[in-house]
Image (cartoon, rainbow, N blue to C red; front, side):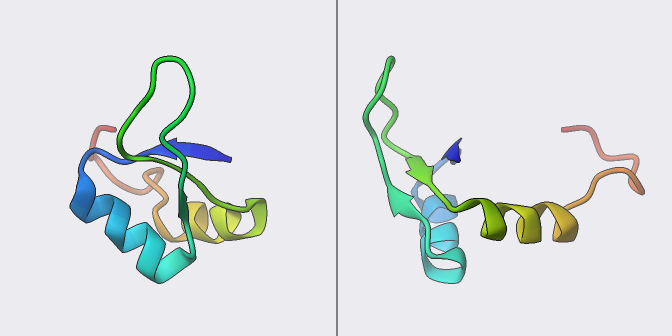
Length: 57
């Protein structure tokens, strides 16, 4: 899965904690785009679930 972090600090968090790999290529290129495997992404979405929150994404 391809994901784009908002900044270098967030990218580093995903690299350190979830094994994300930098992948800045594509159209348009993005300096904080990374790839992460599907099993890890499922784990992340279970932790960061916004259904029980009033927070907007």
